[in-house]
Structures are given as C-alpha cells and as structure tokens.
Length: 246
Image (cartoon, rainbow, N blue to C red; front, side):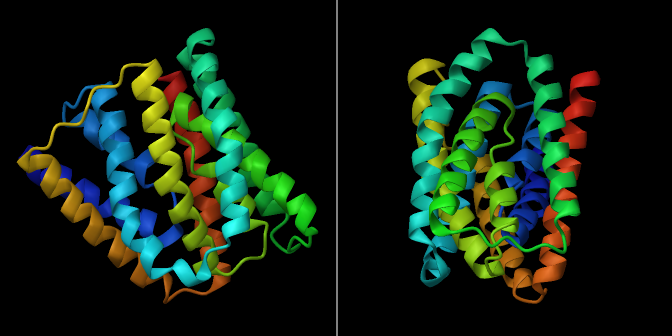
C-alpha cells in the first residue's frame, strides 16, 4: 500500500511540476511524511527526485534555455543557501513558516496586480533581479522547501515564453538542488538516500509524471500558464501559513 500511495502521489505532484516547472517537491514532501518517511530523509529524497526527474526536461528544452539568467539565479542561490542554513538555526521553524508564507502570498498578489503589465526591464536590471531571486530561493529552500517560488515569480514577470520558463526552472533546480544537498550534507548531516524498490518505483513514476506535465504544457497558452503559476504561488503561501498555525 505504501508503494502504491507513494507512486500515485509522485505521479500527481511531478505532473504538476512538469506542467508549471515548480512546486513538485513542495507538494510531494507532505506525501512522504504521511507515508512515514522521517523528515530528514524525506527532504533528501525529495531533492534527489527533483534533480533526476528534471534532467530529461533540461535535455528536451535545452534550446530554449536562457543561460545568462539561469547562471545568475544559480550564482545568487549560493550565498542564499549559506544564509538559509544560518537562519534555520537561529529562527524557530514556526516563525520561518509564517514569514515565508506572508512573503509568498505577497509575491502572488504582486503577480495578480501586474497581470496586465508585462515586464520590460533592461538586461542589467534583469541580471540583478535573477541574482536576488536565486538568493531568496536558496534561503527558502533550506528553511521551508519553497525554493521554487522566487524563480517562478521572476520568470512570470519576465515575459519569457512557456518553454523558456520551463527550461530555466528545470536547469535551475537540477543544479540548485545539488548545491542544496551538498550544503545540507556538510552542515546538517542529512542522511544518504539509500536505494530501495519503493524509492526506485517512486522515481520512475515521478519521471513519467514530469513527462506528462511537459506534454500538457505544450497544449496550454501563456495566459493559462500564468494563471496556473499565480494559483500555485498563492496556494503555496497559504499552505505555509496553515502549516505554521496547525
């Protein structure tokens, strides 16, 4: 039963991740916890699965990748991860969840407000914004697993095509999650994810879900893609606040 429930959850969560480019790890973490996976192992497993499921996306969408923007986000994520490790030790988890939830909700409302105002920033400002988004992603990833929100918000305001956003997010998560795993392994002593028939099955189903999500993304226009992004950002912020309260 654990195998089946984990597989169903992986398919659903990674289909969403393939469709909009983020939120798969955020959605799958509660599934792993409900199935009895210890938090530290669930975090590590989630990061590993996010990397492996998105590798095919990077290959498929490589021609749409904005290397400069993605590199800037990754560069910003390095100090962000380091800052997140410090913040996680100094600030209670409940306070972090409330703060992160409020920031994410504000980001979602910002997207709603700017729905009819496509961004037209010069490349220099775009690079600075990418660095900031990467830094925020690093902090949120280590502290609250909301690392997908800042780059998703940045790309939603960039005016980039759907495939360009998915390409940038896929590449960012593949490399950024590896950096996060390395930092957590060194500083927080995150346990190594041991292969098993269950984790292998969940990974394979997650890869299928990601592929299905990518296929679905080809069938929707940019406006609907924006709506899905905004909805998931608002849902993520709300979920973080509810989790902190309960």
